Length: 369
Image (cartoon, rainbow, N blue to C red; front, side, top):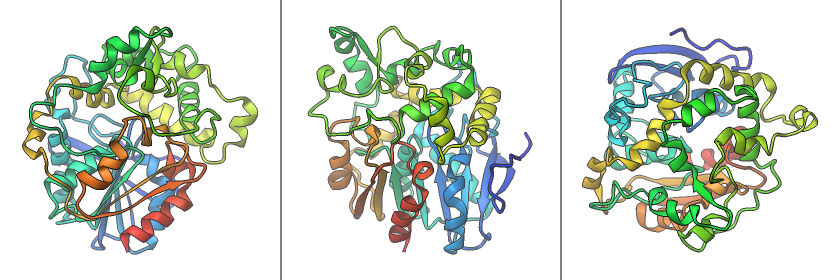
């Protein structure tokens, strides 16, 4: 696989392939000089290392060597199996931590000043800090709170599975997106959406952003179907709709698209291009591990707390912050031992470092200091 070359990638961000990473050839974006204190940036779904493009150079200017990989299953990183019936063990959380350890070893980095994770990258970053605090010396979690490792005997009882029957029985039948993303047809639904991948990404990113008027976030009272049904349909979908059908209802107008300075059409095209080649199954396999007991090794850390300094950054208009009732508070008080603050960026939705890079950088500067 060739490195990423695209006009929207800021000059000064380097793209390269790194071989021999826990069975992968890993695509990595870098900024800043090797040998400086390192920052490891882990993207979410459906994102890429490219998602960090707006903050990498400013972080490098602070004196850091900034490293952002395409994680296993994503982008230009190769060496993973994209079949639905593939062995899911390579996508287990502990193996994703091994991926990052192998990458740092290949780059000659003994420890990072901080690991920073967004969306699905947030639990990966959290587990990196939990398992190897000597290597990952700070952790900033973004958009997805980390309530702690699974308790003993709980790694197979995914909340989405437990609530599925109750959601389907509502007067307006619904389903949780975790359940949908674990199904065999999800990847095909996404890859063959009638509007095309570019339009799907535009609708999906708009629906979850601070631009969508329905993202007025408030805490939910509990993990019940009635409470979860208050979430937007990108989290709790109508029972018989696919994700492309779900977000197509909220497709922004041509005028809104033209006015979207935080995600231009050229930038959006990168996501459509990269996922058009790789598909979504690698990322979806991460959701599937929540239903199969693949992460049972993490039960060995039941009750453990992240010992290194930790913080959280999210959008004030991001339902991802509140989608699991109580998770934010549990992260602040139970899952971490050295909490350094919660920063909710006004006006930002789920894509906080892309929607509001200046405010995200301000929070990171304070934390990294």
